[in-house]
Image (cartoon, rainbow, N blue to C red; front, side, top):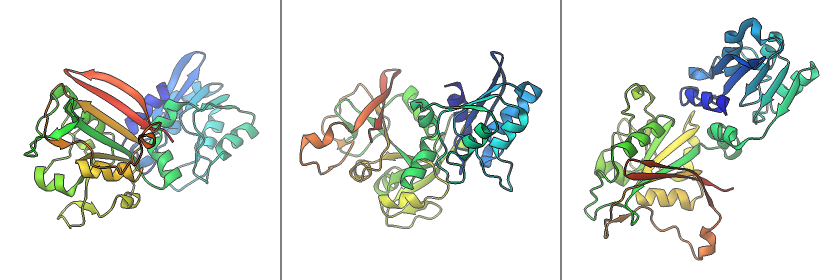
Length: 312
């Protein structure tokens, strides 16, 4: 878990490479730590091994993703670096789906007498969600964020929506934005609210995601896509964060393109107003069950936060 938490430090700057974490342990002590650097290089293993130095010999390396087996002009293969450093054991939480590695990194280490262990851990896969989703589905990992009242509304009938949640919840949203490569809203939300879609937490302003608008109209200076299916064409995007509105949320959900829903709920009642999600076209309640699993819950001031992962 420690390596997976380290990996978060590489998001989103490591794109297009996955954010990987690595820890080197020798005789019960951590001697090296690393995570993928901006632009994807150096890799986590290279950073951790450089920090460990001679202490890496005979040590155990914990790496969230299988060490790469392919050499490139950007750097050596991490499997080779681990061999050269004299690592005695490697533990990884996920095999690399990249066909240039895909088991070859582990095989190379085993062939040289290094003990290897592949442990399939949910929290490791979660730390690599964008990379694994891109490999499996050919699109970014999509998080849909909803800030709503107790009765499921995101705005008054007048469309006024500032602010439903309090300061703590909004700060949490900005921390989630800072982990995304791109942030998307619908054309109606863009025209009505003119949202900034940036990160306004001290020290994280440079992590603001690229704004994207779902609309058929061209918008000067902003990337637009005409349909939900076009998210596959967003370059170097592993994590897409969607913030509204109701019809945009419904279109992504109906197309089964949402991997996580983050719901922020304020202790207020609006009554007549704009619903959080438009019509999904369900014909039977049975179609709604078994699709979402609660993975996170917390209180944020007077508001509550829940994260739901798509069950696939």
